[in-house]
Length: 281
Image 1: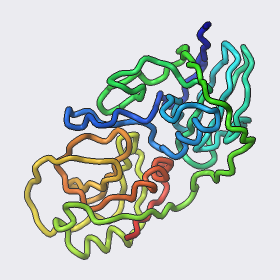
Image 2: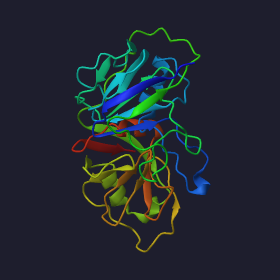
Image 3: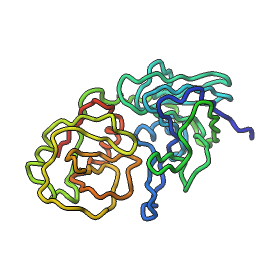
Image 4: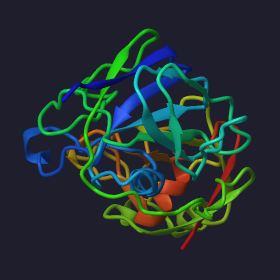
């Protein structure tokens, strides 16, 4: 069977290939990585009849333009890019037809799925790009040609998925105490769940760096490195939290005061620098 291709005309600020990630390899020092907003990733694959673990393109703040070298079916989910005809609704691109994603009005990350999946070579069992570890395929560059796989599953028969766009204003998420809650005073906990945090421009797929009033420690000293997970709120010496996302380190030496509930981490992955985040217990 003849292989089909997509040609990237412009890649935008950051476009990577992502799937469900590399599970079960933390003991080897290999993080999971995978799509930052897993909810949008899963929806994209469902809307084109892909397998649940098929690879897609994760597009940061639009800017991607590509050409279908062969007939394909595509869809976008997550952040709705300007002038995009295929958001939450699969469409067919004929050979030679182009698709361009403008900047989204709200949200940060858009997921573009093609029926059959982005069929680049897997690395350690996954096609995901881990920007911290440097594993997986390189970030998508202008001129790249991406192979498209085959799908044996039927199309779902859904015209448009009724999914609301990511929040454009303040986001409120839930937290639970972390393993090092006792390293911080009660006043610090009340500060954590009582103040608004700003998302800084230093944020990326590794995590969100937040700015606000520093948290007061109940104890000083160093902490031996311990395992880290997605959704952990780690407190470095600055006293302001870092919320770990998909490409977080496997271990860390700063205390974790709390965890954002797992479903809410997907919503946090759509936050832009300058947006406000509130944590609620």
